[in-house]
Image 1: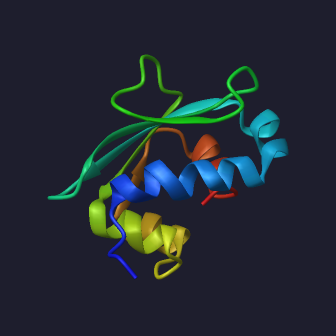
Image 2: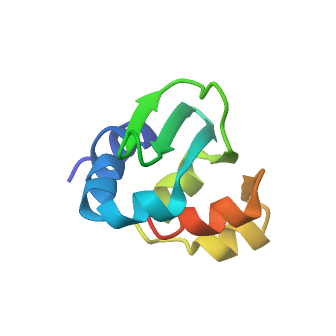
Length: 109
Protein backbone atom coordinates (compact mmCIF):
# COMPACT_ATOMS: atom_id res chain seq x y z
CA UNK A 1 0.00 0.00 0.00
CA UNK A 2 1.32 3.45 -0.90
CA UNK A 3 2.16 5.86 1.87
CA UNK A 4 -0.73 8.17 2.74
CA UNK A 5 -0.09 11.88 2.32
CA UNK A 6 -2.37 14.82 3.08
CA UNK A 7 -2.61 15.54 -0.66
CA UNK A 8 -3.77 11.99 -1.43
CA UNK A 9 -6.26 12.06 1.43
CA UNK A 10 -7.72 15.40 0.32
CA UNK A 11 -7.92 14.31 -3.32
CA UNK A 12 -9.37 10.81 -2.81
CA UNK A 13 -10.40 9.87 0.74
CA UNK A 14 -12.02 13.09 1.91
CA UNK A 15 -14.32 13.49 -1.14
CA UNK A 16 -15.33 9.82 -0.79
CA UNK A 17 -16.27 10.37 2.84
CA UNK A 18 -18.38 13.40 1.92
CA UNK A 19 -20.15 11.46 -0.82
CA UNK A 20 -20.82 8.57 1.57
CA UNK A 21 -22.58 10.87 4.05
CA UNK A 22 -24.67 13.33 2.00
CA UNK A 23 -27.06 14.15 4.86
CA UNK A 24 -24.24 15.59 6.95
CA UNK A 25 -23.78 18.38 4.44
CA UNK A 26 -27.08 19.98 5.50
CA UNK A 27 -26.17 19.57 9.17
CA UNK A 28 -22.64 20.96 8.90
CA UNK A 29 -23.19 23.71 6.29
CA UNK A 30 -19.76 25.34 6.67
CA UNK A 31 -16.50 26.02 4.87
CA UNK A 32 -13.33 24.70 6.51
CA UNK A 33 -9.74 25.63 5.78
CA UNK A 34 -7.11 23.03 6.63
CA UNK A 35 -3.62 24.41 7.24
CA UNK A 36 -1.40 21.33 7.24
CA UNK A 37 2.20 22.03 8.28
CA UNK A 38 5.29 19.97 7.58
CA UNK A 39 7.08 18.69 4.48
CA UNK A 40 3.89 17.17 3.00
CA UNK A 41 1.70 20.04 4.11
CA UNK A 42 -0.33 22.65 2.32
CA UNK A 43 -3.64 24.45 2.54
CA UNK A 44 -6.93 22.87 1.47
CA UNK A 45 -10.51 24.08 1.54
CA UNK A 46 -13.36 21.74 2.38
CA UNK A 47 -16.69 23.32 1.47
CA UNK A 48 -19.53 21.41 3.11
CA UNK A 49 -22.51 23.59 2.31
CA UNK A 50 -25.91 22.68 0.95
CA UNK A 51 -25.29 24.58 -2.26
CA UNK A 52 -22.08 22.77 -3.16
CA UNK A 53 -22.91 19.39 -1.66
CA UNK A 54 -19.29 19.05 -0.53
CA UNK A 55 -16.19 20.13 -2.38
CA UNK A 56 -12.50 19.70 -1.59
CA UNK A 57 -9.91 21.88 -3.31
CA UNK A 58 -6.32 22.90 -2.78
CA UNK A 59 -5.79 26.49 -1.64
CA UNK A 60 -7.16 29.00 0.83
CA UNK A 61 -10.86 29.53 1.45
CA UNK A 62 -12.15 33.03 0.82
CA UNK A 63 -14.13 33.07 4.07
CA UNK A 64 -13.62 29.92 6.16
CA UNK A 65 -16.01 29.43 9.06
CA UNK A 66 -13.40 27.25 10.77
CA UNK A 67 -9.65 26.90 10.32
CA UNK A 68 -8.06 23.59 11.29
CA UNK A 69 -4.29 23.50 11.84
CA UNK A 70 -2.10 20.44 12.43
CA UNK A 71 1.05 18.74 11.16
CA UNK A 72 1.01 16.51 8.11
CA UNK A 73 1.70 13.43 10.25
CA UNK A 74 -1.07 14.23 12.73
CA UNK A 75 -3.53 14.67 9.85
CA UNK A 76 -2.58 11.33 8.29
CA UNK A 77 -2.77 9.62 11.69
CA UNK A 78 -6.26 11.03 12.34
CA UNK A 79 -7.55 10.10 8.89
CA UNK A 80 -6.15 6.55 9.14
CA UNK A 81 -7.54 6.13 12.68
CA UNK A 82 -4.09 5.82 14.30
CA UNK A 83 -4.78 8.90 16.43
CA UNK A 84 -7.99 9.92 18.14
CA UNK A 85 -9.18 13.39 17.10
CA UNK A 86 -10.08 14.40 20.65
CA UNK A 87 -6.69 13.35 21.99
CA UNK A 88 -4.90 15.26 19.23
CA UNK A 89 -6.90 18.38 20.15
CA UNK A 90 -6.36 18.01 23.89
CA UNK A 91 -2.62 17.47 23.44
CA UNK A 92 -2.31 20.61 21.29
CA UNK A 93 -1.46 18.76 18.07
CA UNK A 94 -4.75 19.92 16.50
CA UNK A 95 -5.88 23.54 16.65
CA UNK A 96 -9.23 24.92 15.52
CA UNK A 97 -10.68 28.40 15.25
CA UNK A 98 -14.29 27.33 15.94
CA UNK A 99 -14.78 24.44 18.35
CA UNK A 100 -18.48 23.99 17.57
CA UNK A 101 -17.84 23.56 13.82
CA UNK A 102 -14.80 21.39 14.50
CA UNK A 103 -16.98 19.02 16.53
CA UNK A 104 -19.36 18.71 13.58
CA UNK A 105 -16.44 17.95 11.25
CA UNK A 106 -15.46 14.93 13.35
CA UNK A 107 -18.49 13.14 11.83
CA UNK A 108 -16.74 13.24 8.45
CA UNK A 109 -13.30 12.31 9.77
